[in-house]
Image (cartoon, rainbow, N blue to C red; front, side):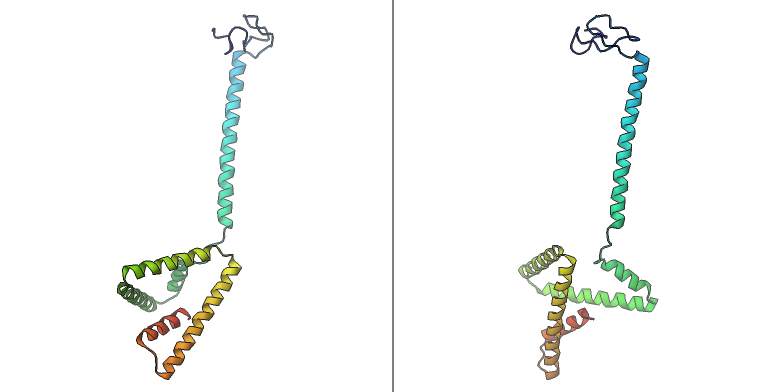
Length: 184
């Protein structure tokens, strides 16, 4: 097959010169000169490249716009804590950090008392509760939070009554302390 023949052989020529038919005589369609054809192909390649670049830029811009419109996480406890610490004096900040360390140490000590099976059960219970909360709509989540808070307040009131009566056990006393801290 010669350079002037197309992929189909002698009868499939795809090029001619200045409107003349090809030398094989197989086709009669006039074609563009090679220089003009080369320039046109460069222009088409540039257009395709430019289109791809524009699509990429548009996709990036849409993604960034969607990220900017997305609401900030409402559960960002670290940001809330950071803001609280920012507004404290150095002495208050140190006291807050010390109190947090003590709470963590106390929780760790209580966790060490549990058997591995009990720890695993607690982890699974927390994981399942978290998954259940993630699936809820914001309105439903607010209702669940209110119900849970009401139960905690009811339990706290029961423990306070026992405390006033003087029949509070050591474990119930710890539970009362935790509930009072949580419900502040």
